[in-house]
Length: 359
Length: 180
Image 1: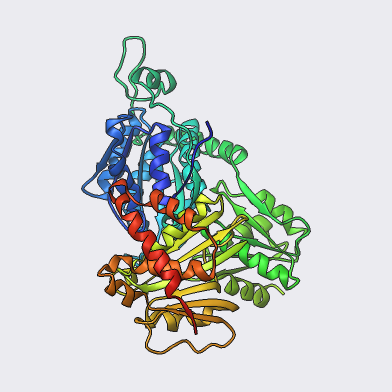
Image 2: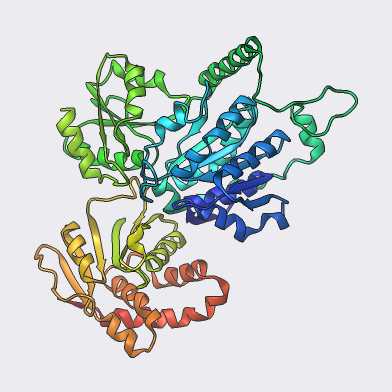
């Protein structure tokens, strides 16, 4: 039977999708604009049905370390927060990457810096794709632009995290979290049994048996030679992810004279701007990175020889624009337009920016 | 078909839930829908607003410059959104909440005394359904049948006994609305 079409908020879709994925645990601490994720999980009471644990921790720091523990034992575990809370989790995220643990993190971004505002923002781009925590690590970063993608990226995020033994993050914002749209939820998958986890994740700390060595989950390696080896292994993995997992959407880019690069909710607003610009005879394409890391550099580079100029439109002061410029390497002019601190531009403002900066 | 609507008023007037019922009604008719609320501090006691888009085609932006229809339930919202109605568009306001009537001449303006009617009915909660009835009278973007189905879908079961009251309020609203 076809799944029913439902109407819900992006945050609610994340919660339902996590239960349906067969997630083993969610650990979080409330913060606007993403509190509906834990609220929905608490209402659904999955511990009575699938056995999924839902726990409100005493802080964001506690929650991310519970994720570390759960992930270390081979469980599918996740946490969610919004910008200031995600900053608190950075140490734990670096440790997850260092210990090569799969986990899903959700950031429904709000305006910063500091405690900032609760309105939508994309100002955590740098934090997410350039580090955030310490050390040479990378986070698989998925940027949903619809409620449907909020639901779909839970499975995608977990699957990629387990495939590469690396944390993955869904980088959304207040618009995608708070708005309601139609969604078809993914089908139910049962949670893995302990037996299945031992078989599928032989690296996990599931209790030593006689026929194997001890599994140690740690990011600590005091011998620098071995630590360099670890890092070389991580880097090889990251190159593999960059080769295999780039995702993007091209919206009317063929034969476009100008290219907008935008992700998440901003990509939706830019599609409306695209319609308005075309009505005025300005032929604009929209390229939407779906993975922010790995970044779709190759396709952007491809368009560098085809369009007259590009503009990166973001809810920040100019972050992704740096990656767009790296991708085109000076072959075409790349401008930036953004609003700051929780202000969301209307499609008209984007059209005006195109006219001012590109034409 | 595509209808871009803003509903704006005070927090507690049922702005968000009215938008939600419209969105669910659209869902019942297999339309594409987005419901984008203001969720800021303004929602808590100040002005609340929600953008609802119903369309036969995929919806691009949930954030809009201008609206086909504005439903305005208090004075600050009129000041904010009157200029955002597309030329030839529709503005509906509640007579009780607005002291200085809208002044544009290039849009269709309607008034509904929904607050007075809700007071008369001794049912403050009927307010937003009265307004919804007024909207549907002049812009039948969804059928009454879809609205009732949408209500059933959006209300928890323990509130389903309230659906007939809501239906009455919608029908009453259809009678009350008048062109200015």
